Length: 460
Ligand code: ASP
Image (cartoon, rainbow, N blue to C red; front, side, top):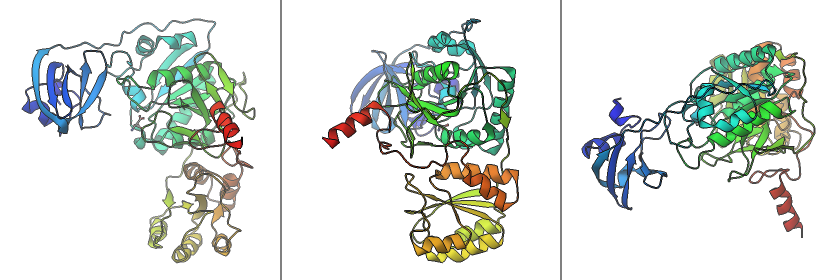
């Protein structure tokens, strides 16, 4: 792609070409929604292909859908050199040492939240240049492990990340931050909760839901919260740190096995499911919402068990599902299947013979619930009992994605299905809990002040 159209793809590309304008053209744009004046900005590869991004004279960036454009006139050309100023990250012996491992996603590709730059920022100097507050909390080192959108994360990347975490812990860092695309951050958070056990330090995953060239970007604040947590918190767990409420009041720390991306575009997309989050974090303080977390230690005795059986699948049951869905997994050599069943954990009767066949072939089949909240209960209905006789194992209130990565991890360790079952049903990192909290709302979030206030009001 020529630099004149940096980041633009069809169908927007043709609109730019037709109107003889390019990136850095100062333009007057007539649209069905009125006239706009501004500078055409480059786009990142992660951006959609439908919008032209204009930096308006007031400094705001807006996206204009190409289909609304009637005409564009170039009135000038002003190439801006949006260099993120590289500044030496200051080293202060009195501050904790934090390592940022990058895997990709929006947060890695655009971090200059003030200028709207589209260049990648990742060295400590670039990060410091764009988010200087990071130096208030720690000495930061960075390393790019991968540069992928998170749908491309998988066993190979999970294993490498777990191993990199182990090496950093051995080297003596005080906290680890992992930059990650948000889409599958909860899969990675869960699998790292199993692969990395007994960590003496916080492992904090962070991403951004809105790219950093948008005024509403969450990239900088999420990063500040994550770095503060890694540097200062006494929570030695694998956590996800993202926006709490929709505004930028505070972030939430979620336990890696209990978190889920719940909204495709809200910044407050990550929610702890079936439980309450670990803590709230803002620039000044970390406020625990519970006490049952693993504490920071000074030893380096981490256990890294980075294995994964790839032949594991997750099947989301739907009415009228045919047995051939299960049969084809068995025929293709799958060794484990997690079902997300309806209600308390159901699939239709026609699938039962396929479950039996799976058992005969030594395939491990586990049941979770589509409702996300609540427990699999296979004793309530006769059908549940029947399914258990066919070898389907209920996984209490483990989230489907968590059960999927745990099964891959368990089958990576042993072929013995009894041992696999023991691993699956023994809680390691909060993936199975005894009860779910009364205030664990999905839309709000259990434990935080707004929810308590809400409950007070409805109880009145
Ligand atoms: N699609 C991106 C990803 O998950 C979104 C993001 O970075 O938040 O990698």
